[in-house]
Amino acid sequence: MSYRIPFLRVIFETVMRFKRKHAVLIAISGLLSAVAFAQTAGIDAALLAKANGGDAASQVLVGESYAEGKGVTRDLQQAAVWYRKAAEKGDVAGEVHLATLYRDGGKGFPRDAAQAVEWYRKAAEQGDVSAQGLLGVLYSLGQGVAQNYVEAYYWLDLAAAVKGPKQEQYSTNRQMVGTHITVDEQAEVQERATKWLAAHPRRDAAE
Image (cartoon, rainbow, N blue to C red):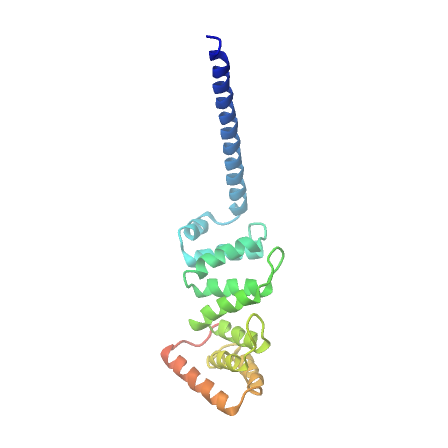
């Protein structure tokens, strides 16, 4: 019956290998948990709980904490993750923050003008004045999108229609862009903008 000894040895070695692998997996899991805790340790627990629960405003605030290094190590990748969570819910603040992050870039986070345009457009279509003004500028410069003075004029016209600290700036930019389009094109854009404003009543900008 000596053949049983090698067989039992194989079983024993297999069990030991499994235990070692299991121990390694537990150690890795614990390390990842520790890292995750360390990354969020400086963020208010109640805020983080709300953000993890899906509250868009809280997600934007957590994103800002990472973007500005408030209570945590500055990490633009993590900031983008949290901004995107809010933006994908249609939250305007999340969309604008994510767009601006893509526009400006930073350490460990490359610029992506096309993504900036995409997210500014989503916020602009919901009536955010800053997004409309910035989208108009991007169209005028051809950054992240094909240069189109008619579209630039349209978005700047919408932005300039709202009273606020930047209204004069938007009006000036619109006037400059207007020199690149025809009178007929301006009239068509203003008619289009008038229809949009009638369908999207809004308060004066408080930015």
